[in-house]
Every structure is written in structure tokens, then in C-alpha cells.
Length: 340
Ligand code: ADP
Image 1 (cartoon, rainbow, N blue to C red):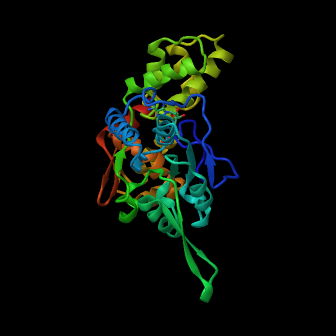
Image 2 (cartoon, protein in one colour):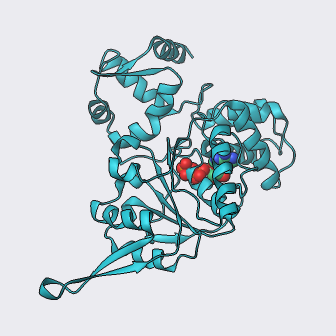
Image 3 (spheres, rainbow, N blue to C red):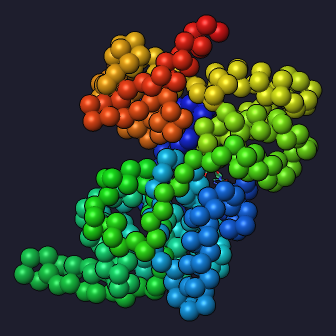
């Protein structure tokens, strides 16, 4: 079982998950493209697609977003719906077990609505087949009755935009991938971009003003991920309120994050344990992720989605044909960590 981490970019899920829910507004979530900070290239592509669609009174192109969790894929679906003046319907691949799970929503959607499917790589094949004609021709085929009396009835849908999100673009079938007009990789954010996201959040959360250096300090330890930055901001806010009479400066940030087990690089116990395992048990690698996961007692999927992307991007880890290898910088980081 994957344990919940303070810096886990995955959002906590509820036990009972309806297969599709209509969007609700989240207080910190940006609602316009202007409030959606960073990702300049993606924003430019989307603003062109949005304007063109609005001018022609057409639905917007289907969009596939790929990248690690917590980088703003769900948020973008809400932003797009809001910019189009329509609604967003949110679901995920594993919640849709059969084609009919989608029928209710697809038939209830109004012209131009947005359907967001998270973890689209986990969509069962039967549901995927339903989606093809829906995406291409805005229609779905139902089979009524069975055996000799079986007949296929075609139902026309309102034009809509599908936004698919995935952490593993490589697992998507070519057939599904080719049906998206816009395919974009959401990248990790720069520290300055995260600082700006935090500044925006401070205003939305109606917190007292915080100096830029403190926000920068949180941003630099957020592994390039807005969800982590926002979660750390809340942890530091609690600490400052309870332990420091509401003082909020770099020393308070340092103390609060140390208490949460986060080091100067923003790595937490799970990241360090991954690097330690690779360095000691596997002598630096190469080693397969399944083997590393088994040694750590973790789920290989969690390591691939949540731990590895940032370690790779930060240069602590490299991926070779033979498996994962710790880099020289990764070794140095472990050595300096052991000294402290
Ligand atoms: P994902 O769907 O990729 O896992 P989310 O869309 O849920 O990520 O984003 C996580 C949080 O980060 C959201 O609460 C949102 O407010 C914030 N966020 C993400 N991207 C941005 C951005 N570009 N600008 C401002 N806030 C963002």
C-alpha cells in the first residue's frame, strides 16, 4: 500500500467515487487562463484553440495532457470549461468499468461541455471503444437486447470536448492518442512560477501578506509541483499559527518543513529511501523499478508516478536500458544527507 506523504502530489481520494461528477468550484483553483500561471506554451496553444472555437461556435479540440500528478491537469479542464462558458464533468479511467457508465453523462451534456477523464490510460478497452465514435462523430452506439434480438441503436450527442489526463502517455493505445487534436506534456514548474502560484493562493486564502523570500523558500522545496507547494503553504501556516505566534519568515518555513521531514531540496523520506536503496542494496544500479519497489515494500506504480519523475528531472537518477541508476549528483546528495 502506498503511504500518504506530505509531499505526495496525489490528491486524497474518497472511498465512494461516483463514476462521473459535475464540477464544483474549488476555492484555490484558478478559474481563468490568466490565473493559470506558468506553462506558457500550453496556455498559448489553448488560448488560440479556445478563441478559434468560440469564433466558429464549435466545440474545442479534444486535448490530451500528460505529466506527473499535481501539475494542474484537472485545473485546466475547469479553466477550459469556464472560458467556454460551459460545464466540466469529471471522472477517471478506473471509475468507468463498462461502456454504459459513460452513457448517462454523455447524453446529459450540453453543447460545448467538457468531459475530463483522469488516468485515461486505465480506461477499460470496452469503454474506450464507446469513446471513439463519441469523440469523432458525437454519437454512441448502444446494443439493445441480446442474442437473435440484439440491435444497435445510435444516439446522437451534443458536441463536447474531451480532456484526457495521464501520468503514463506510453500506456495509451495509438488509436486513442490519435483522436486528440492537442497533445501536450505538462512540465514541472520553475521556482519563480511556483512562487507566483503561492502569492495568488495567499490572496485567495485571505492570509496576511507573506514576504516573497519565504514563499520562494517553500516553492524551492516543492519539487516543481503546485499541489505540493500549496500543501506545504498550509502546513507552514499551521506551524506559524500554533508555534510562532503567526510569525511567517524563512526560519519558520525551515523549521516547519524540517518537522515534516522535507530537506533543502524538497525531498522527503520516500525519495531519500528510494535513492538510499538504489545506492546501497543495488550498489547504485542499474536496477529495475519492480525490484527497488519490492525491496522498499512500495508499489512500483507509485514510485514511477510520484517519486521517479522529479528525481529524474533534478538529475539524481538516470534511466538506462538496463534499469535505474543513481547519478553522481544523487550520490553526493546522499553523502551530504548522511553527514547532517
Ligand atoms: P493534476 O490534475 O495534474 O493532478 P490539479 O489540477 O489537481 O493537478 O492541481 C493541483 C493544485 O495545484 C490545484 O489545487 C490548483 O489550484 C493548483 N494549480 C495547478 N496548476 C496551477 C497553475 N498553473 N496555476 C495556479 N494553480 C495551479
